[in-house]
Length: 431
Figure 1 (tube, rainbow, N blue to C red):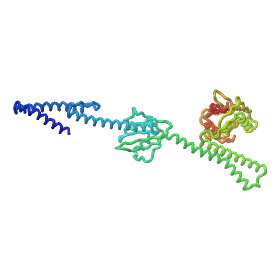
Figure 2 (spheres, one colour):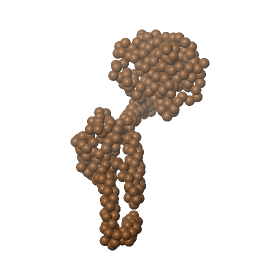
Figure 3 (tube, helix red, strand yellow):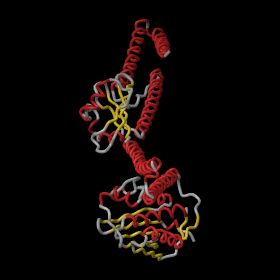
Figure 4 (cartoon, rainbow, N blue to C red):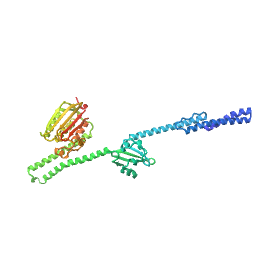
């Protein structure tokens, strides 16, 4: 269209010039005038063409030159196409940025690499998983940075249907599940997921099942053994022996009952959220009742005192709080030798309510303190069984306090006793 318009303009211009010149000066002068005009117009077009070539050879962000006549139309069309292309590029750039932000926000690590295993891109989570840096490691060979034999074998196998469980990497204590996803033209994604917590939970589950089985097996063995013995030949035993065996059976039955009750309590606490059935719990009568219980458990072997500095009222579940406080006080009785001292204290201190159980017992070494609230964790298994503990008491205490927004602080030193403090924030108090 532009070429046709240009030709028509040239033809019209030649007619306008050729007619008058021929009329006044003759044919030769008319032809000369047309030739001169055509040359001038050719120069004019060459000038605009030079401007266009200069723009094409220059930087991509250079503005289009301004033209006149048909060149103005041509430049306007080019300008429109350039603007459309820039808009498309900007849209693609924004889309790419959104995808990159999405990959950065993923909870999994992602590494993109090419067929030569050179890293194209790394997100922040992958940097953490493999101790890499996007700034310095991009372009490096993946196997030069992650040299673990299991990973290299997995990469070389070419079969990525099943993920790889990757342990012993560059970050201590971290277990990763790796999956390679091929895409595009010989491109691959290495996706990593931190399953360290899942593995720890699974280990705790296995240990829990093993411990429960062990704790139930021992009393069941005793009960079954004495029951079979008495049922096979009851008359062969004297009355005193029979009473002794029956007492042992009752003792082991009571032990299994305590264990099952503690398991049910712990299960209910772990499956629940915040404390339910909140009520007013007056600390003075509650702790006096617990004092009577622990004195009965002690049977006069310890000096036990209770001090209620402030007659406070807590908001929460009375049964749960009573269970937690009883476990703390009962543990002090079990792990304090005869003649020792146990102090139960309730006080309000710096805006907190504190229930303190201090004893002069055997104490606990520092390396055991972080694990005391784990289920079935015992510093001394043989002594725990002798004292009748189930290994769940402090786990119950921890969950009860958590449900009541409270914390447990433990101070202890071998041979010098222990101090357990249940600390409740001010918002737990009730008027």
